[in-house]
Image (cartoon, rainbow, N blue to C red; front, top):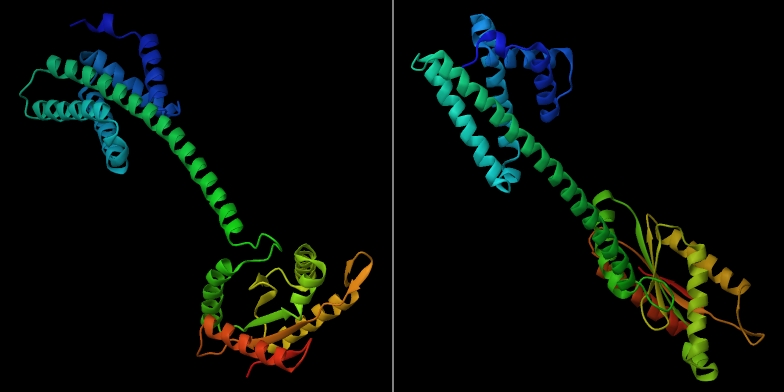
Length: 324
């Protein structure tokens, strides 16, 4: 073993201390630097240090052991993917414990103990550095996975919107409405909010198709859907419920509020008639309105609105029937 004058070179110890701090990712604060400097100086030249200074070096190594133990506990899953590095680190820590025990029991010489300490410290720091690199690489991988998941979620949201949207009018389709109805009905019941359904069916729409063709009929549906969207709030939902039948789900709205919405839509249709080759086509619709009761679900609500719509159509054109 080298003597103290050969081993203790302050510049070399300082360089090693800074290198080890960098490898561990620790900030080179005066406190951290001093601890590593003294520990390395003690291991390099134990005879030049007092027993108290030697004890401080041991305490630093035990602190490293505790830190690595915490890392092992909190990153068990990650370490399982780093079996090689984990095994090397575990072996080094095990040897550290054995060396500590041998030292405490005075079963090993001082030179032998400090020689092992130097080797173990380098091994632990090297293993920690490798772990730090693996964690950094894993962090990049996890970031990539997170970005991929977000992209998938966005794609699913777009696809779901497409699946729940009527291709012709842009209104929600029956599939989307069935899912939304259950959710809105439960929310209304839970928070004691009003919820109304409006069903309106274009009067004598078959005559439009027979006289002008289905392409014109499709444009009429698009026209009516656009007018309906213009009078609705962002929270209201327009649904193409059937061929020429539409449904409006009005959250936090009672039957009187729902009737007001329909009267506005009727006025909008009168002021903005559908034009075909400079010919004005009068489009009217019959309507049934129902509000959610305390003792019913969303499907029962729609059924009552449908029954009211049937009465309105039976009694004439352009009528509004309020469900009981």
